[in-house]
Length: 254
Image: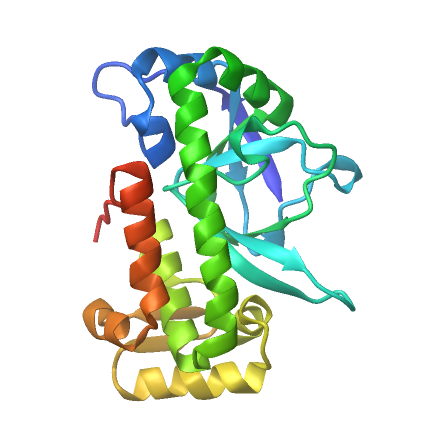
């Protein structure tokens, strides 16, 4: 579910600047950021639901503030696989304002929160007239392509326990929280495996005290040790973002 709150606003004085909570928006020069936000809506994304728009087509791009979106590649027989995750570090939608008729990837709202939403055609127009925005989104697209390719390799060669640890850390980073509202069924969908396998892998992590679980949520208890369990893809993804964008992917608040 998506709920529109209001048109973009530019905070002043002591207001909490939600325009800077997203790393891409924060990296823009003030003039270009204001020009972009003038065309944005501040919307609420509610999990766990698909990110859908009218007629089944994605006509907007989303800059998450405190929400998280799983990027899914559709498969056969209504199955899909998570190939990426977007939170405060990025953008979901037609990246770089590319003018395309159909956006093939699907978005699943993994963590409730807010995002700045802009019409994809408007974003494409803005990239032609704002140099820094064009460069920034082109670099981000390259980062996403590298991370997506790495996800394919990860799914083929790394164990489910390693991939689960990577998933939990990745989403924890993007949501600024160690408490993740996710079920084993949802994890099975995202990781492209059976629920029973997720339960076994999660049980092993819980026995070691790295995570704890309740009904419908998982808490990360020991990030350092969980990162040691995760495959190298987690660390390489962060390195790819930092080198490509010039800043760390997140500035965690916990």
